Amino acid sequence: MNVRVGSPGKTRICPHCKTTILESASVCPGCNHHLRFDPKAIAESRARATFSALRVEGAFRNPEGVDSWEYSVVVSIRNDRGEEVGRKVIGVGALDPNEGRTVTMSVDVFAPQGPK
Ligand SMILES: [Zn+2]
Image 1 (cartoon, rainbow, N blue to C red):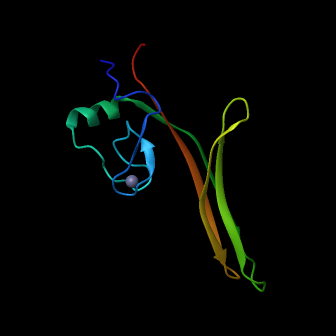
Image 2: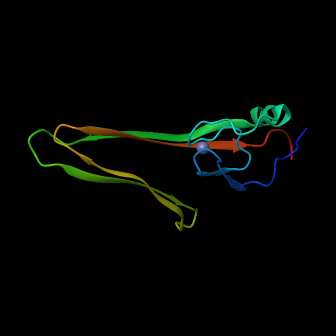
């Protein structure tokens, strides 16, 4: 069985957090809400191979005894030709002295199962 839910890359808006997500997602990667309760669709979604393409984590800290810092977290996506196809400011904020943040960025890949 190789039935597709829509076409690859098709998106929709999560009704819970309003993030743009894949139409094929059964769980929103932004807010972790379950989006479909159709058992057939959920079983189909689980049958698809899923892997984490990358996961990067880093921490930064404002050392004690200096003024507050400001930071912005930006993620950009480029295609094979180096052209930017997506760019988003994920969050901004301030760090008081001796305060830190840890940023984690992950990419999940969903591949259809079975022969073409
Ligand atoms: Zn959501």
